[in-house]
Image (tube, rainbow, N blue to C red; front, side, top):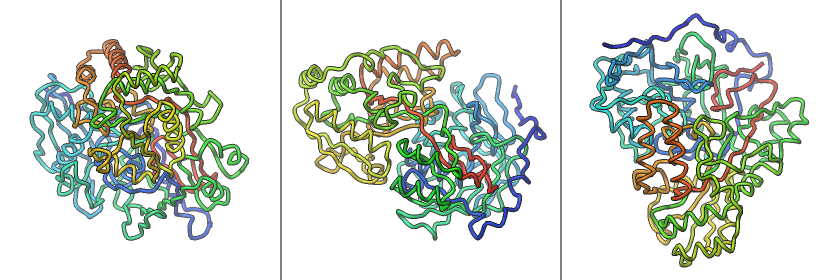
Amino acid sequence: MLRRHILAGAGAAALAPAALHRPALAQGADARTLRYVPQTDLTVLDPVFTTAYVTRHHALAIYDQLFGLDADLRPQPQMVEAWQTSDDGLTWRFRLREGLLFHDGEPVRGRDCVASIRRWASRDGLGQVLLARVAEMTAPDDRSFTIRLNRPFGPMLDALAKIGPPALFIMPERIASAEGTAQIRETIGSGPFKYVAGERVVGSRVVYERNAAYRPREGGAPSWAAGPKIAGFERVEWVIMPDPATAAAAMRNGEVDWWENPTNDILPAMQRSRDVVIKRASSLGIFGTGVFNCLQPPFDKPAVRRAVLRAMSQADFMTAVAGADPSNWRADMGVFTPGSPLANTAGIEAITGPRDIERSRRELREAGYNGEPVVMLAPTDQSALAALAEVGHDLFRRLGMNVDYRVSDWGTVVQRRSSKDPVERGGWSFFHTTWNGLDGINPGVMTFLRANGEGAWFGWPNVPALEAARTAWFDAPDLAAQKTIAEDIQRIVMQEAPYLPSGQYLSSTAYRRSMSEPLSEIYAFWGTRRL
């Protein structure tokens, strides 16, 4: 028997579309243009190929999703109109909304969804688990697709709504048929905006225009990636400003409307402007991970990685990123986002215990470190990552490591980190990155937690015990069982150190009072308008 699910409450309380299409006041030629300062330049267009957030933000504008995650972390139907599940949980049937069109005028078909799911799943940790349980995916007609499993997969809708990079976006079959390891070159989606390739200026500008053919889903209000995606601007321009002082001046002068991530040290001056609103970007915060290259010496040895973990101080990393006020950060973060259901203290003494650099230097030598060069990648154009890298560089030097500190823009880091070659042939040893707190709430969405060797995320750790515990989480019957497994996962991470947990901090976003409050948690360009 199949259980049928249809979006309820199409006439429920909604953000009236007319409100977002209300004519703007006479404010000159730019009144219908949103000018946005991203965290960095856009160097990769393919949201499956990379986990860079700047690419995810780009993709949210031009692509759409089958399900959208709302502010309560619940998947809500987006492109899907209705779905059915069999009583044994092995058959899932989905029907698409009518009138979905790609930017080239072609209708969105079931086979486009199947191809998009397959390509995304080949790269994503949650998707890989799903794919391993898929017996067959078919598209019986243009407006539907079916997933038949050989083993139940509880978080099916969570997977189809995944927004943490790599997120699941729907592309035309001819594009999505490409291997996930090769970057796509066409950016054809079905979302509320179109990418304007002809106006792209590397290092300076990215442009989008409203998709007049887009049909927002009816009912409800915008909530993270769920609800009606109503474009209140005809055009969105990304203005690349690596220098925070320049971006701050542009915000105060009204040259830009929204700055994704102002640095904490510049916020006091920004707050003195009556025309600028500062708000917390997300209640879940941001957390950092230092990424070891586990394929190459010296971090192919777990004992070497463990010595570094026990030597580092999360407080040092977080102070560098978020300032001296401890209300802005936490220095006791284990594996899972603090405040989320799976957060725990198992094995946390490896992080919170007393630091002793001399002891750690001795442990490093005993672990087999023999002075091998450590190529640390550090970006200059993302202030948080640059600050983390400086602390990491200092730590490695104090531990007596032979550090080759490579400073570049973030785009270069993103490109180089895919290399599995030894450092003498253009490889790397270590880099820092950060994640939205949403990407640390469970093993299914934690890309960096995958530990199946060369099939894992950058760093490619091979920790069978961690992979087994992570896989067991998908079969846990209830939250209590999930919490027990989460504690096991954290103990293994503290012992094997597949990555370096560097703490959690709270960030802010800034926007002009001349626009309505944006959906900052996911940095979406719909659901906001000129006032």
